[in-house]
Amino acid sequence: MKSLRLAAIAEATTLIILLLIAVPLKYVAGLVIATKIVGPIHGLAFLTFNWKVFQEYASGNLTQKETGRLLFGAFVPFVGLYNERWLRTKNERGSQ
Image (cartoon, helix red, strand yellow):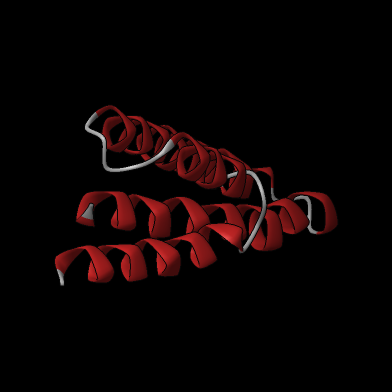
């Protein structure tokens, strides 16, 4: 579950950087290089996160509803960070 939490942080952070920094730099300042750098980094983080979600689902650590929640959160800025906190809480409850 720890690797899923790390993947959630990476995915959410790179999405925020892409949308709030790289895309404005591209369209306001004409720095196309910003999205050429951050875009693939976010793509890798996104794919890694999805892979980790499906691994946890396949191993029985996540329900179908929880899996849907995590996957939906990957498309909405800042929700990924909220989901990481939720995963931490879920993990702490499960360890007790």
